Image 1 (tube, rainbow, N blue to C red):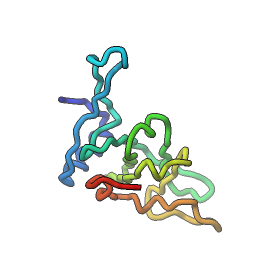
Image 2 (cartoon, rainbow, N blue to C red):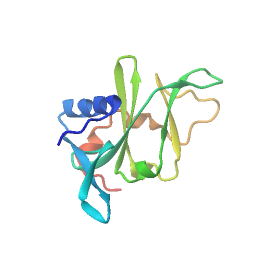
Image 3 (cartoon, rainbow, N blue to C red):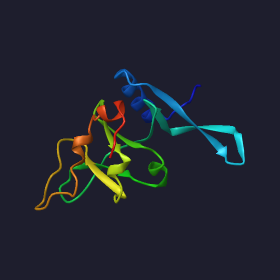
Image 4 (cartoon, rainbow, N blue to C red):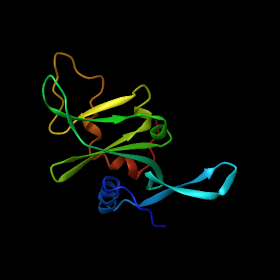
Length: 145
């Protein structure tokens, strides 16, 4: 099945495949009343048979510190998946974060630094998301939480 994904999404899929992890299109019924009408998602894929949603974002400068951050949303569409794959372009490289949805229960949005680590101003953020960068191992096996 051929799916024409947006450029950024396709770049993430290619990156996963280069790691030797199988990626297949996610096909879902267009309407519950017409199960024979199927649609291919342009933002959701099956990675090693795990349902993942891909968000590809550009960075924005945030004040007051002027560093570049990327905002990722945890919305209704994201919550349908087992994993959120958050991707951003940093120069020519693409950084991908593999975040289990079980770790996003009370979070509506996450800001990730484009370069380096978080800058702490007095207090640390509630969660350090940097440990999910390139966490491909989470997609290789079933995670029991």
